[in-house]
Length: 252
Image (cartoon, rainbow, N blue to C red; front, side, top):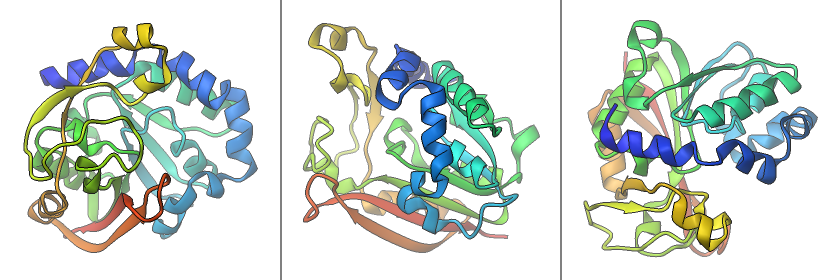
């Protein structure tokens, strides 16, 4: 495991289970919400799937299962890959309470077991802002290509690179030169929800943020055909970009 991945693991296992209970409810409470309308829980991402029943989905950095469990309830065969054992605990308890099942692999995304998962998945799905955790985007995209079947789809949704120069999502992240290639240390995503004293104790993460062209070119360089690129407004200000979704297909 890379040194920066070890750093991220410490950050994402800090109080994570208790955090999800506070934010999303106890597993049985979250399960009830997921089961009521799983498609709605997927939000806009539901429209990027061609179908759900029997589709093998790799949920990359799937966190506490907030999208994996609705996908499973809709009939998908979901495997979450995430670095946090605390996230796994919450996700698995929620899946059980929702009377569905998911597989959850606790690992570094760049070290997914290809003896088991090479060419295995129909869809690789990621959302919520994960690319900045990887210092070499080509390594990441190469792994996504490796786990997909020929013709498989990658649904990659992330924070819009505009957020490098303006905190349009109000995530309390530092802004910088848009073209900066700097790797820097910063707070993990949930730190802003804690009191100041606890906030100081949370392990920091090591980030690399990308431009639109860096993201698109990494997709194209690593065996994908880009078929769609959508930009979405910020949930804080609809006049500013906040997120994007790239849809790409693994070449045969």
